[in-house]
Length: 610
Image (cartoon, rainbow, N blue to C red):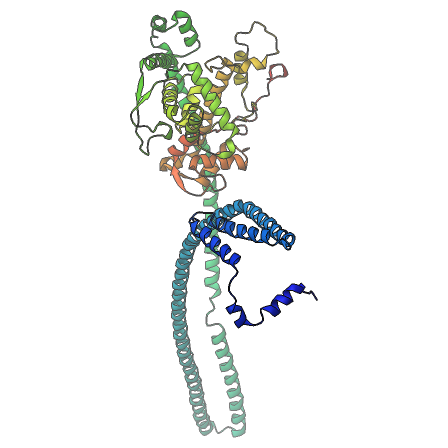
C-alpha cells in the first residue's frame, strides 16, 4: 500500500477537531495572498477569447510566491509546478494541432448535412412517386377484384343455366323413354289384337303364335335399341355427300388462293424493281438537272473580276492570289469579306447585345464595346490556341461558348474579355472563306457539332477519279514530276490559316460525298419522306440498306445525331425527315462500306498511294 508522508498524518491529527479549526484565525500571509488574488482577478478582462489563460496567471503567481516562502518544500513544489506546466503546454499543443481538424470536422459536418438534405429531398420525390405507384396499384387491385366478382357472378349464372339445361334435357330424356315405352305397349296391344283376330279367323295353334310373337317382340326391342343408339351417336354427323361437296369446294378455294398469292408475289417483285428503277431515274434526273444548271451558269456572262483589284488593298497581285481557283460565287464571298473587313477596321466600338437568355454567353454585355482591330493572322492564332487548350481539357466536357469566354477572361482579364470576344466574333462572321475562322464560327454558334481532332486520314472508299484529283492537288506548285510526294508540305498553312490545295480539295470531296450519302438516304426513305416524319428504327433500316457494312456503334452515333440524344439511349421518338437530314448534314457523317450498286471501289495503284 502507498503510504502518505508523515507530516500529513500530523496535519490530520492537528486538524481533527473541526470546531478547533473554525476558531483558529487565518495566517497573515494567507490573507495577503488571497487579497492579492482577488485584486488580480478583478483587474482581468474576462470577455476576451483567452480569458481562461489570463485567469490562470494570478494563480500561477500565487503558487510561485508560496513556493518561494517555503524553502524546505520548494524543490518538491517546483517539480510539481513544472510537471503541471509541461502537461499544460502539451495540452495546448494538442489543442492547436486539433484546431484544423475541428474546422475540417465542421466543414465535413456541413457537407454531410447538405448531402443528407439533398438525399431527403431526392427520397421525398421518390417516396411521392412510390406513393402514386402504390395508389395506382391499389386502384388496379380494386379493378381486378371487381372484375373477379363480375366473372364469379357470370360463372354462377352460367352454372345455373347449365343446371337448368341439364334438368331440361334429363326431363326430355325421361319423357322420350316413357314415349318409347308407351309406343311399345301400344304396338304390343295391337299385336295382341291382331293375334286374337287371326286365332278367331284361322284357328291356328296358340302355342306357335305365342312363340312367334315373343320372337317378334325381341327383334323389335333390339331394333329399337339399335335405332336409339344410332340416333344418339350420329345426331351431329354431316352426311358424306355434303362432306365431299364441301371438301371439293375447299380444295378449289385453296388452289385459287395459292394462284393469287403467286401472282401477288410476282407483281410485288415487279413493283420493287420498278420502284428501284424509278429511284435511279430520279437520281439521274437530279444529276442531269444539276449538270444543266452548272452548264447554264458557265454560259452566263462572267463579271469582269480583275476590276476588283482596283479597290482591294494590295492591288492586282493580292487579288490574283485571292481569286485563284475560285468560282464566281466564291469570288463574291471573297469580295464581301474584303469589304466587310475594311469596314470593320473603321469601327471603333461595337454595340452590346444585352444580357438576355437568347444572347450567347460570350456576347452578354450592356453598352458599347471597344474594337481591338485585330488582323486575320492574330485572330487565327488566338483561335488555334483556344482550340488546342479545349482539346487538352476535353475531359471537362464544357461547351465551346462557355470555354471560349473563360479562356478570354483567363488570358485578358474580365474587363477586357468582352472586347476580345466581340472583335473575334465579328472577324469570324465576316471572314467565311478562311476554313479556320468559318469552322470555329460554325461550332461556336451551334451550326455544326464539334470537330473530331483524332480523325484518321484514309481513303478506303475513294473513287478512282477522286484519288486522281487529290494526286493533282498534291503536285500543285511542285516542279518535280516524280511519283514520290512530300506529304508534310501538303498540310502546311500560311500565316492566315489558309491550307494548301490538297486539304481544300479533300474538304470539298468530303462535303460532296456526305451530300451524296444523305441524298441516297433521303431517296431510300421513299414513302416515309412523304409523311415528313421518321422513326429511329426506320432510319436505321434505311442506313443499313444504303450502307450494309455500317457497324452498330457508328449506326447508334448517326441515330444520336439525328434525334439529338445520347448513343446509349436512341429512343423511339419521331422527328421530321428534313430535320433529321439537316442534323446529319451538320455532323460528321460518312459512308462506312461501298455502295451496294457500285460494289467495292478500285484500289489505287502502288505508285499513286499516299
